[in-house]
Length: 257
Ligand SMILES: Nc1ncnc2c1ncn2[C@@H]1O[C@H](COP(=O)(O)OP(=O)(O)OP(=O)(O)O)[C@@H](O)[C@H]1O
Image 1 (cartoon, helix red, strand yellow):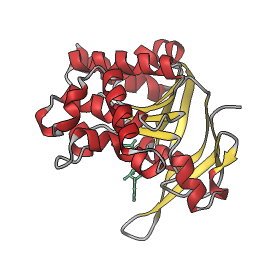
Image 2: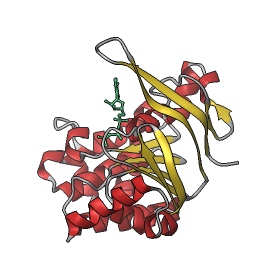
Image 3: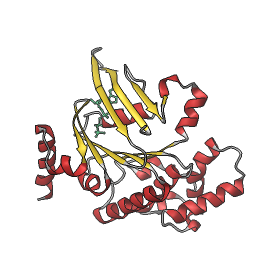
């Protein structure tokens, strides 16, 4: 059984004119334990909506999302909160997702304050220091504010906060798009190392095909709310079958040349 099993899921939004937009249309996918599944597709294809359905933020208009065998639609508020503790999220814009008025230690500690209420303050502090070391940052940074850090360091803080509660699944929402190329590579290497060390399962949403190539096991290509192609990374990126995937990949080539 995969950690995440999405079956025939759809999601509808009301357009301002009153008509309905099918942002996700009959999507099924598996995210196997310990693996990385990437979702690619142009802007507006439904990647973030799909992630929000898996996180239980949006309700499905049909179909089911199972996490570790449990249909998340059957969970009450408390059970849902417990489940959310098992999912970490790394956001695209590290700075925007880090409260500039909070010290770094408090930012990383927050999920423990919410989900592990029995932990003492000292135990939380020790965990934060360990976590900072694990993302290659000096524990002394716990007393500083995020504004003083570089983009790459801020993203490491975002990763530390996502992992401190020891989640099973980590949703990586464009984790490297706002970073310079050299920093991007370092963050990808870090994410790969953490995955191996902690046995993490990654669902990665991205425009950055280099990061997909680097560590996704499987790629799903979304177009207008549907998955139009899927398969092992080397196959989808190397010999794309669908015209849409071919266009998506050739758009990247023309930008890189
Ligand atoms: N809360 C919402 N209310 C109404 N429409 C929405 C909402 N969220 C997303 N949409 C619409 O659903 C479609 C899919 O959007 P989504 O953000 O999932 O795409 P995406 O592939 O993640 O795009 P991007 O790469 O730009 O983040 C779009 O047409 C978008 O305008």
